[in-house]
Length: 129
Image 1 (cartoon, rainbow, N blue to C red):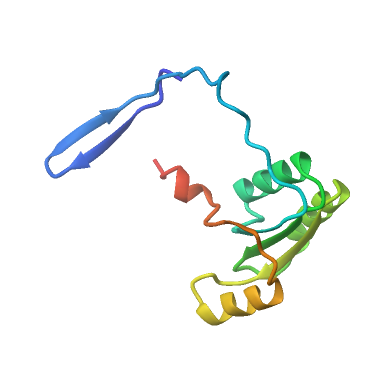
Image 2: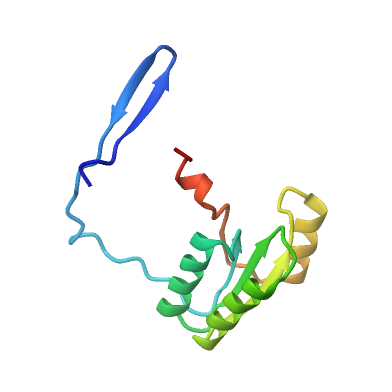
């Protein structure tokens, strides 16, 4: 990963950030808890789907509530089917999380939400180059 690098601009100055490998063997692995209801905003995009699949593979009895602004389509239905075939309960809710009324309705529909993974989209993590 030696070719990965970033520059941050502070006023007129640029600060170069680099990549350095670290030893993670001593770090305990994260374990998703069982029997939870987890809300994933942006849950059917590429990163949201990967996180949802990780939860399904590493836990039991979870209900995944995936949200997005788009209406349910064949691609979203396929993601839900894959998650459910792996043993999860998964539901998609069209919801604009910037709309308070829509979020209130979502929380009222799923009052047992025990975890939230918010803003899962590539632009939040990987700026366009």
